[in-house]
Length: 239
Image (cartoon, rainbow, N blue to C red; front, top):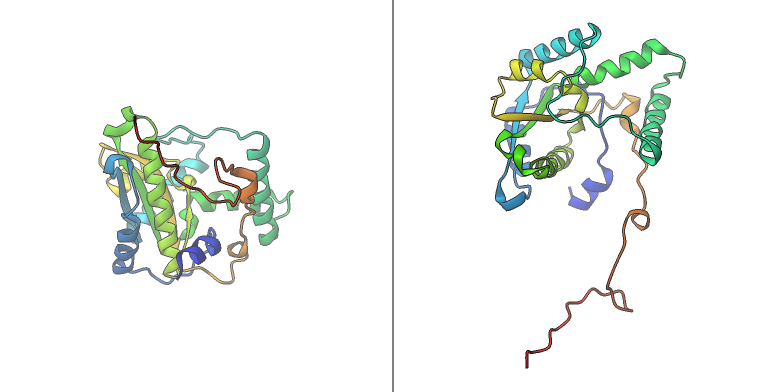
């Protein structure tokens, strides 16, 4: 698949078939994701690929704690409540998803079930827990930025191979469960996870693609000439 095609067509997949995903395919996808750029070539990310009983233990632990009223416990700061245009975009995608699934605003039971799907890693056959080296916490948010680049590479590579994926912060909101079940070392910080598998073509929400802003809305161009060309100016030789 052409890179630009993958970037245009990729969307979050939240419904999966029972078809297994091979370790060989995951290694191929992660080899591509591992080529992401990073600050000073630090390569701070780690991938913990969970499936089978290990993933079921994570699902069970997340669900039990959330239904039991245990507050979320993430290892990075929570994003809090969005406001303004960011809240508008959050609401917009929620409306698209609920409309696709036929979940009415007053249907509290189905809305709650939708939320719990996130804590169950969307019932995907594979979950990739993404961490970064704790030693880099004192260097600001750069390690998180770098890990984000690797995650983007991961979901694009998965899409190019016919797999679907959704970056899923809900899946690690009970991070103590994830750390214990996945045996994640203490010198790594749990950042997020990616639910991954073969898309269920009959799952209506999989057809939803979020509305994106036009480049003109979020980009400025400075210094281009009258022909629209970006050129390097020649420096005058020192006298």
